[in-house]
Length: 198
Image (cartoon, rainbow, N blue to C red; front, side):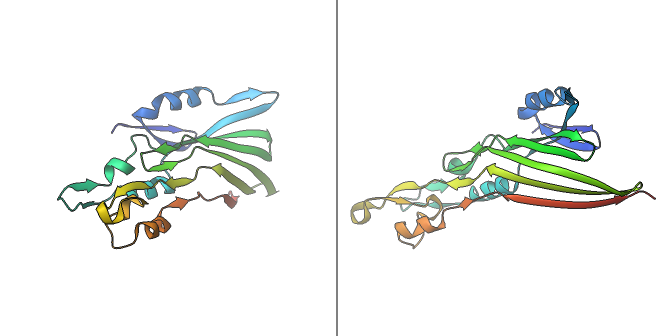
């Protein structure tokens, strides 16, 4: 997979070829100045902790009673990796709005929903050589959800809804549904930083 490494404003980004067009659009759209407000690109990222969780689900498989091998990869592998971008709209020297969005990703049995990121940055200068900054941000949406399968348990069990990954386990089909993944991203993030120049 091709990876474009770009350095801009001290931020290094790794852009996969599939997302190159979106990167170019965001790169040239920033900074945008309107009514004294400047909007700049903070970063573009591909993948997250939920992407790692989704990738973990595609590991492994099992063998049916007839000897046919079933790989989880065909149900849980996504061709597109969740991509996020973040922008900063500076309203004053000490206050800015942080905002962004993510594309999400999906496979047949797992989905990461698109999400929105909203936040603010407050900055104070206790002395001319020191800076105290507080960043508060929240993510709306972006949940990971797993979908069930319908499995044929023969003349005894018939067709039943089951967790795809546990269809061949010793658990009753209905009990496997309790182990389906439903993960939310970190909803609130607080970042307090102190910087001094010596």
